[in-house]
Image 1 (tube, rainbow, N blue to C red):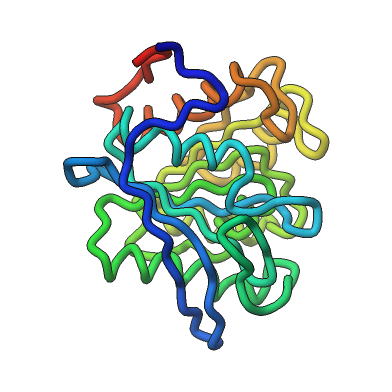
Image 2 (image 1 turned 90 degrees about the horizontal axis):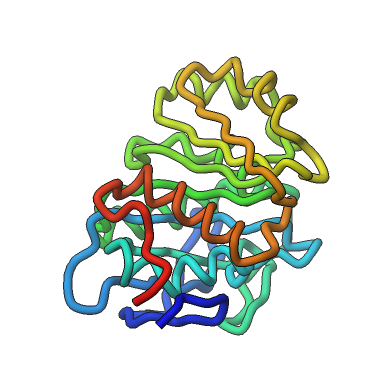
Length: 234
């Protein structure tokens, strides 16, 4: 069977709640391999909720639908404060990336408390800003950024990640609306351990199954190389 955009592969999918340090309850889901423990974990940070971003944004939904089965990964998705999806609405209100520091911390604390292994943070658009600003946690083994706009994240945040020292993979669409590959390479040059990958033909929202497959393959290549490249059929 060919893996298509709507393919949902077997996994254990559990509704979860995250409790933030400032007293909010956030809703989410944890997807795990069906019959074995995960070898690594993706904590995903979604695009801008004021522009339609949420835990079900399509790249993350497809990651949860596929990667537990294909790559033995745990995929943790959640709605940041004030964000709604089919799973429900997280308490609080959007805070432009500042109060969301507590949301990032809550997700990482959940992963640590539940002994989820080898945690990598995956940020997309607004989620890349949250990653660069607030994911400097000893638990985090590395991060992967999809379509970083570098609006809220500053050079100071890039310098902080450079000092943090963890690997950083940056996937930049050729036709991104905010930051394109050449400019991204210049901006991320201040992070010695950053690898910037231009993705030919892609746009900011990664629309189209070929681009989703590229993104998921690049994630798996870093997080569980033994499962790379991902199959196109099951």
